[in-house]
Length: 472
Image (cartoon, rainbow, N blue to C red):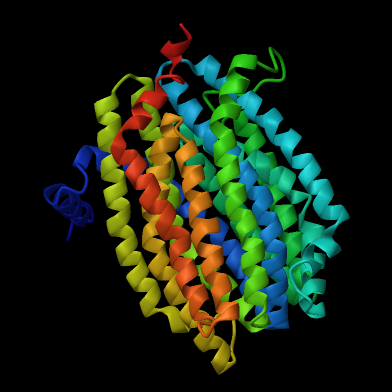
């Protein structure tokens, strides 16, 4: 009988022999990354499943409507991701430096900031859902579907902010298993609820929105149990637990959190805001093209699940090594995880391209729509390689607290390259080809800049201002 561990050992030895990543570092990386990969796959799959279910019932206009509503949801969620990114970097450094109490107080700061940011965003989306969606298209059907979805799902953003903080807090203390179980369970619940409401009760887009909102709230309730230091059947209690008592704010920690998180939030928001002009440009080609673009981007997000794991592993391991004063080991981890990401994403991209056409048929059934969606899926797969490199490089920089350069890289990639090139398609004979080039530039430019920044090594000096010993 073949030992199932044997192929894994052979692969690890091969990666080490090729100079991609040493075995011990691979083990530490995989231990942190695989639960995040599953978490990312589950979260992205539930969104894509909603898109496919709605598309199968209501067609391309409904898919376009969800794309428009999803753009606003994504901007709100990206604010949460940016804040959570600052949280994981600082928590990992303090926890790695043996300052658990300080890390716990930092998490409390993150929760209060998350709530302060989420409430006005939710209120704005609920109150102005219709005019917000109408800004992006004059297709009445698509606007109606988008308005319905955004108005119902927006309150769940408050829960999503808290879920992000919880997930990243666990990652910062080297526990990615607990958030995987909670998030994956929420994703299954989301698909089950949405499917029941869409197909069983005929609620259509409203059913997808209700399913997402309810499942997101349930995830928050489950996370709160462990975040307050309680165990889930013998494990999963946060070692940097929240408490209702004690100090609620610490000016020094709050300042550090905002200083590290602000560039990450700005980067993510700039990415989200760029979606609006991109969708508006794409809408000039019709709802079918909007739907095809959205399908391509959703498939890319699922395929990028590996980057979720490698990025958070990079942040955590680099941050913890820096917190312990091991700059050489932090550099080795960052370098080898980035290299591993490049190799993995090359293979994943090749698989996505090979399966582009059958994948497209899951969302649309008209031959022309299938062909267009398959093309967008293939192009998105090409851009996936740079996306993986950027995720791991940004993760290493985030672990060091060096978050400004990734922000600038995103700005340049989106607003200097991606959007201008996409716009050329509306005024030249390039047409939709310009959208293909724009998708590649969207990830390629930031990847080049963040990789350059990592290789300069300046992030090591930046990290010294955030380490526990810097306060003594």
